Figure 1 (tube, one colour):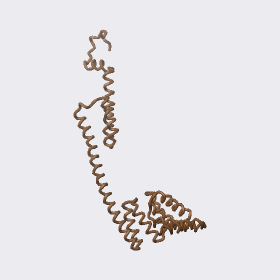
Figure 2 (cartoon, rainbow, N blue to C red; figure 1 turned 45 degrees about the vertical axis):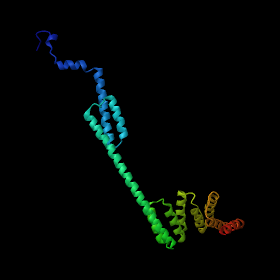
Figure 3 (cartoon, rainbow, N blue to C red; figure 1 turned 30 degrees about the vertical axis):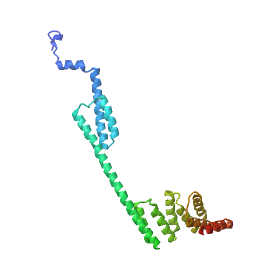
Figure 4 (cartoon, rainbow, N blue to C red; figure 1 turned 120 degrees about the vertical axis):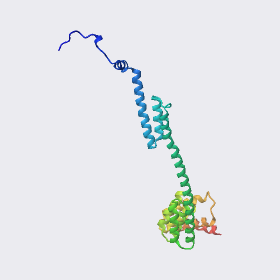
Length: 254
């Protein structure tokens, strides 16, 4: 098949939409707008995903970044979505406040119960019933693991049972929590002395002796410390030092 004549420009008909597209498909302004809108859409989608995960700080950063590329502050539906997502923050804040109030209430209740169990333990110990005393101290420490009165009371109950290793463990916890707990240091020294560990016994007693120079402790307690030091020095064969501390102990008893 052959053409009867040459095709002229007037013989070609082009849809106007194609002509308009050909004029704009390489327009840098339109391309830039499309790129910015695509980036903004990605930022908004990631912001929503981070908000759903609870990372509101990252969600806010992405929202700001997206708004710089393609603002949506005038978009009513988009802003409703943003407000709904941010409303989760208020819900979480209220939930946190409720949980903190509950924790505070439980802490007060546990503290009161721990004091009651400790008091029962003290009563049992003073009535020469160390095993029931320990049971009550254990209950108190289940509620408040760092409750010094319960740790100290349980250590004294272990001393009464001559379980010096257990007593030392509790005295050590007391001293860790309250380094200047003088009585625990002295009694810990006694526990080590009863286990024939004179090195550790002497160490605890000397720490207590240093404390006695800067604190005002009752004379009977100081007398107990010097009597124990006298016994420790006797055990290691230092008769002179033993006599010195025994004299101090006797003077404090007067």
